[in-house]
Length: 74
Image (cartoon, rainbow, N blue to C red; front, side, top):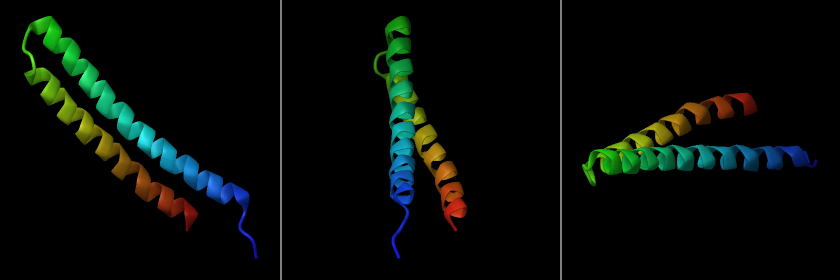
């Protein structure tokens, strides 16, 4: 038996979207922190705080998405 080609493509698409969401959350947190640091002259504290918040938000979204993807495939 052969597998459907869409199964492999779907798996790569899901993995790519998870990575993209993680990177986007980190970048957005970093950008907000840099912007606030420049505006409020608090360099580098707000950048570090918002970078950490972006990392936490990114991993939260990854953890939230992955179990639902596994349930759909079973």
